[in-house]
Length: 135
Image (cartoon, rainbow, N blue to C red; front, side, top):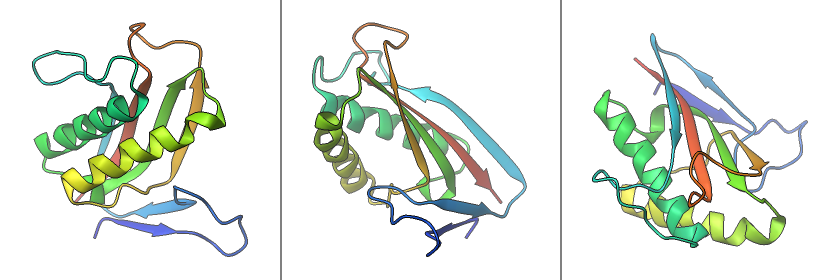
């Protein structure tokens, strides 16, 4: 295993993420932000945060697979959400759950969620970037 996940007892208990990860390997992977576009370029879920979250995570999984990795290799995720408010949390977690079910993996990683005014295209509601380590 190249990534060990921890929730130290001296930190607040996280809800939906991990507090830290320790990676052992030799290849670092820095994945640019993934959005809700299919491989053919079609937008998934216009106006639907859960659907866009699911697609963004699926795209992260595809990108990792292209270099021989999986979500097991992810050390950290940064999530950028447009006009973030806590009322959107359920939609994000629903999208993550659906992606996890489709991929058959645990997507709970050290994560920072950052509210932003806009993303690269006005239709995007969320973007997910990853840092991973491969053996």
